[in-house]
Image (cartoon, rainbow, N blue to C red; front, top):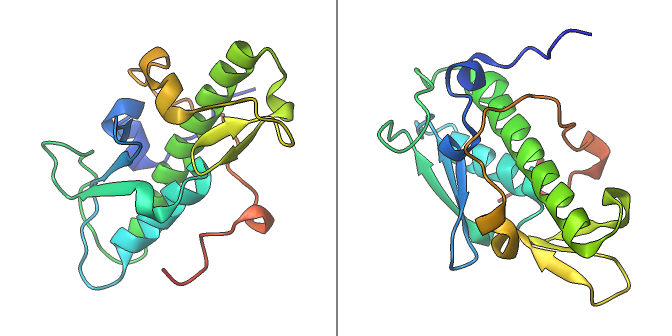
Amino acid sequence: MSAPTLPLSLKNNPRLDRWLRFNADRTVTVRSGKVELGQGIVTAIAQIAAEELDVSLDRLRLVAGDTSASPDEWYTAGSQSIEVGGLAMRLVCAEVRLLFLQAAALELEVGIDELQVSDGAIGIPGTDVRTSYWDLAPRVSLARDATGTAPPKPAEAHTVVGTSA
């Protein structure tokens, strides 16, 4: 089985920590190399990140187009912003979510399939047993390259993408 083909933005900027960071104030800094030119790309990228991470849009702090702090994704033009940059963000956030679910499963001594993420809290539904991205962040290193192997959410599970923000 061959390795998944990463979108160009992610192939050129594979480090997960280049794309996002969990902050002490319980927000998430999301970095995109795309800029807002009136087509709503910044909102769309934020929605994609919020969707895949299962956090509210209010928790996101988007840094866009600052290549000293965000991935250098070249141009923001036409449909490539979502096709390449949006897909890269979706894959990054899906992989980060999986890394945190794996860490939570170890900490809480349960299977990943027993866990649910809601606004960054990771827990066992119907119980008070939980942790969060922010609790786990000091122990989950994002200083690694994306693999592109974590499955993004299926479209039918979307609650943020495709809605008006």
